[in-house]
Length: 451
Image (cartoon, rainbow, N blue to C red):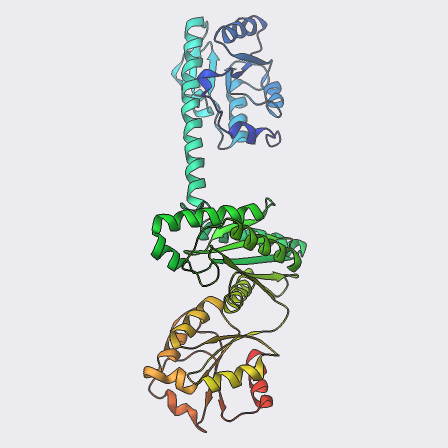
């Protein structure tokens, strides 16, 4: 069996001009010198270029490195006959189709049926009329042209299904697929991988005041600015949500991710898109969070994305229009929510040197951050978690993204379990710490839950 066709990708690409308007390469497989001469003449008169093989074996060898558009195959040949040669060609080409016309002196029905079953597309009885063979070439070319056009349309539709229709960045599904592929390569080569999460600052006020058409134009221009900072073919940019984008940077360390993140910030600023309703700047800006995984062992792509999301929250909390990063090998991330400002401040002060801290003032904000950031631990006071008929506790337990996150409840009670009596729904990992507590007791409890 001959090897895989090295020229196959080239012949699969649809021609820019229909086959009827170009010179086709037509492979003529014929053992008779007289018929070869006559058929070559007919093919040239039809405006095409003949490529000649004297036998089935020679045709197979020739096809290994010579792309052709059509085959005219003699059936009665010594060695491999036309039917067996066609079967081998069809098997070799797989899903790619080239029209094949049989030439034979046999006119029996069984011979015609065998030719079609072998993979032939037309069947001509010798002697061949020049007018008929030229007409057959034109008919097969028309079929091939329509097939190529259909392939081109299917390829365009496939490409469109992968893109976000507004920004022409990858849609979320396709981004995830391509990012997983790059992550597997990174695991194989143990190369660093970085992820950037990008958010257009105060985009809702922009949309509200300038209108949705202007908002759409803004997102298009911001996307082009981001693409201009991603200069390598393997870099992947996707639209993750309304005004949120994500970029995967294979083989990129934290310094490289920071350079790309800063480039995106500066390039978007340089667009000078007016934004009178932003509290950050009089023009459109973006906030960027980056996370880098230097060694994939022990980590998943989701870990890196979550890290970039946490870094994005840091950038927003520090005034936006800036770049923040998170090292996956460093501190864990804690989400702290308390109805008491003093309780919040005390807890943050005790842990801020040991962990990355994200805070939430309300139950709804706590839920939103928990779903987006996926912290390693959530710390809430009893007033917050059991307020409004255990709302926060129940919601954390019922949502798939948050149900497995450990929950530490700070309480005044020395027997806090009774607080859950009214609710049978609770997170999978639940722990208590009685107030007042010391730094040592808080750190010990946190370490036990994180461990």
